[in-house]
Image 1 (cartoon, helix red, strand yellow):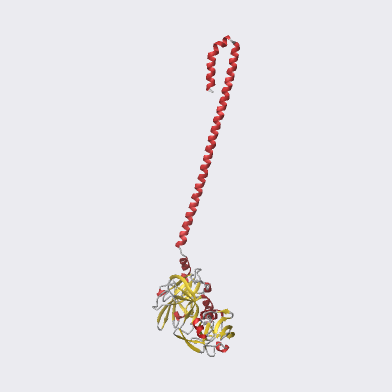
Image 2: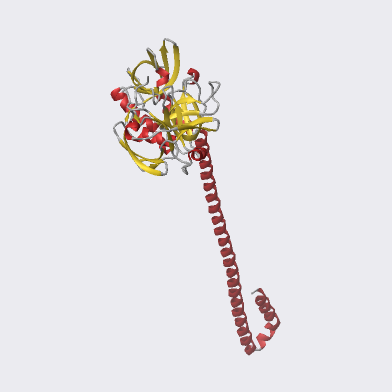
Length: 418
């Protein structure tokens, strides 16, 4: 626009003398100046529009940059929130790990496990036990209190109560005591189902080894279905083998699964030095659940009795007997006048040397009980102990010579310890 203004002024200076002398030229110049002024305005308008367009573009660019900064700000905030949430989760996880499941279960059961002192003419023995119900019944091992005339139950908080014997069962090595709470709040432990235990499953033992009340050890289920010999000529079947450390004084304490349920009663260790060497045994809760109610109600438990002795079959015995049966239970002897004898089951009729030992062969081979196959004597005894009662009629499938026959036996009651 300045160009047009300067051009107009110069034109006026140069032509102004002529404008006085030539009126027509003055009109032409005036018209020219009008045109120049119009052109100047048009240029200014175009310049201004161009400038505004540039400014709008700049403003639009700045606006886009601001939105980008805003989006970036939002993303940073979102990431910070996610980081804070992750840190919170990490903190929670650390807290959970710090309190192990074993610790949590121990805290739940510790007040229900007791130290037992049993005084007999031979001295004082120590053992463990646990609260069975709210009226004062305590479960322990028979061998812990057998022959005692004074029994004291001590809780972890130091409360000591005198206990009386409600019932005992030497054949399962279980006993039930009774205490009067006297203001003590009893917290019974819940019985679980030992048949649901899996090999390798973690377990917890709580008891009083060497009188050290409230001790806890952990391990796994090493095996199930073991036979545990007793001093009365009969074996406890379906016993749980585990590897948690147990020692004298643990007897009678609970074997607990990771749900906090009692799945067994710790009863023995396998040790030539009377100390822990990695093998412990517990009476399964399936037997406890059958025996304890009878001990509370009657003071005793009636075990089924077949009246035989036997052993598991194997390839060497099968070869000696010239049979093709390598699984099942070989009846070696039948108790005269017992249930098996009355039903016609047969024992061995000759002895052979197998593995350097004399084995009586030639008897019936039991391969099924009530239609359920049995491979070992452990399986047969566990079935009879956990699923039958005196007076039940049980069908035995036996291999006799070259035939398989069915023999029905009316089970008797096991004679009392002699």
